[in-house]
Amino acid sequence: MVRLQTALPTRYASAGPSQLATWIEQAKVELGSRLIILGHHYQRDEVMVWADARGDSFGLSRIAADQSEAEFVVFCGVHFMAESADILTGPGQQVILPDLNAGCSMADMADVDSVEEAWSTLAAVTDIDRVIPVTYMNSSAALKAFVGRHGGVVCTSSNASAVLTWALADDAGGNSRGDQVLFFPDQHLGRNTGFELGYTGEDMAVWNPRLDSGGLDDVTLKSSTLLLWQGHCSVHQRFRPAHIEAFRAEHPGGIVVVHPECAHDVVEAADQVGSTDYIIRAVAEAPSGSVIGVGTEIHLVKRLDDETPDKTVLSLDPLVCPCSTMFRIDARHLAWVLEGLVNGEVRNRITVDEETAAWARVALERMLATV
Ligand code: 13P
Ligand code: SF4
Image 1 (cartoon, rainbow, N blue to C red):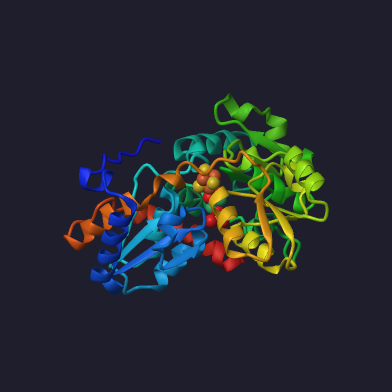
Image 2: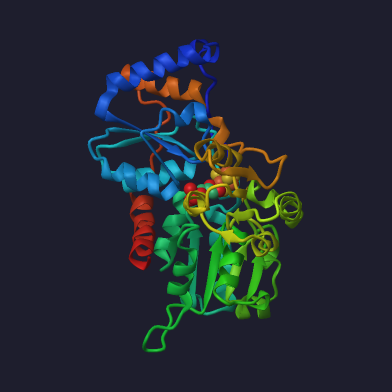
């Protein structure tokens, strides 16, 4: 997805770290309670030091919505998170993404046109009223609106199993909302959650958006309970069972915790699996002296290690890369947007049009009513 971040003026491009820190600090003081800076757990330290709140994607949007006096919400994260914040915040609040090129490669793997096409194909072979679309929070506002319009729901990595249960399980009267789920964009979260709920590989099929009919025949389209969009996170998909084996060989007694965006064979080999918040809690709750091998983004892993001196927290993959899009947000872009605000110029505002936001809110509210 092309987003157009202009090059920064020389003032920011050539400034050193202490100069940038001074500018950011001054702008924060000047803007006071009109400003809130939100920092996603995967952000660099040079950004996180300025965050008024840290959190996961959904948690940060809710914090922004609860801070109605903050006129400017500077979201240090990626594009879909800033969109969610705009959907959840009030009309007097403006959401700003310091670098417009901070997208999410996984979210970009499912666009609304391809999902509409998949939906029409499915409608031709199955009872579409019995298919529930479920989108992971890591998706565009347009996709959240799509699921809102079609009786579906958003999920996060913390509540995916509750959401799939809501979609598929029988209620007390023996009736279910749906017989099938179209889950996008992360096949791994969908598959891991399906297995957790007792579905088998035969109940699931992968929809390849680059192929006619997703690459699936009519029988498979009709009979699969979970149709998993062929998307993935390039950061989490890098972890392999061999990393866990190597960690266990080096640290017998070590604890392995991975994010559910990792492939299923990695999840199976781990001791614990859970969302970003879950991983943070798992480290906090591990006994003092533990060695914990973590399968998630490297900035969070390093921060957990730094902030938990009585435990050793390591990345399972010694060569792991940061999330390259999260990494785009840096002190230079933060200083640039903040000084803009001080001078009355709102740079890089993220807005979702009212109709899209209204339907996306329906899907988010269904999620909140579910979990
Ligand atoms: P959270 O929803 O836990 O913030 O995760 C977002 C993400 O991008 C994980 O890769
Ligand atoms: Fe997207 Fe993966 Fe980066 Fe999360 S870590 S923002 S899913 S690319």
